Amino acid sequence: MMQEIEELYQEVILDHSRRPRNFGELPDAAVRVHGDNPACGDEIHLAVKFDANGGLEDIKFTGRGCAISQASASLMTMKLKGKSHAEVMEMLRAFHDMVTKGTNDAPKSLGDLRVMSGVRKFPQRVKCAMLPWRAVEQALEQGAGEATISTEPD
Ligand code: ZN
Image (cartoon, rainbow, N blue to C red; front, side, top):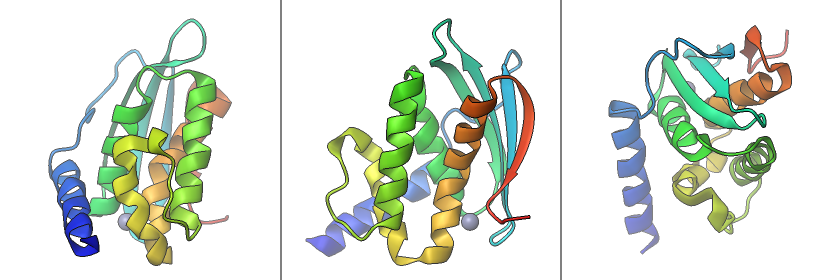
């Protein structure tokens, strides 16, 4: 059974990495964040448009990198689009806990994002999975303009 679940998870990750959702430009974005994961060579360019209350009205990305980073970005944008600032921060915390802590009980609120739970067994892959989330965290913090982030300390 566990094996079947892991295969299903791999299928979802491969599907999202091959056909990423919300992939493309967002011409009227309020903030753009360029994220780098030099440990793996992943890059993401995240663009966010806010609604009047600071929620994520629209979110799109482009980039290239491993299947984990691209699938994580695709699944993340699907999940966060239309969410309030507080909901995004809650998801960010829950996702980070899921991929860094050794628990099998990721909150149901994460939905499809739970397919990424397996990366916690591979510390190098955690950076790949977290890259788009680091980018969205920076986008919320900054609110406007452009920024660059990296998974590696300066
Ligand atoms: Zn990667």
